Image (cartoon, rainbow, N blue to C red):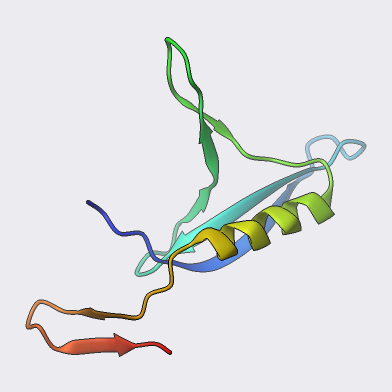
Amino acid sequence: MKVSIRTAYRIVKKTEDPEVPIFIPQYQEEGGEDWHTFKNRIHGKGGGYNTVYFYLLSKAIDYLEHQKVLQDAVVHYEDDESEWTKNLP
């Protein structure tokens, strides 16, 4: 099982059509420099995912705040030598 520790969040505004802005929430994982979009799984025969996006910035911010509340808190973890590497309150 891969553990994903999210360390940063941002909202990207797509400006292809200036009259209809699209706000896409994204997150960055610990140890990486790439930004990832949030996705919802499509149920049905084809499967796949839909990108989460909003037409209102306030809704995108609410979504990110909700994601932060839902994520697990890392209390501590150990490295390969079984030594403490993080201790968060």
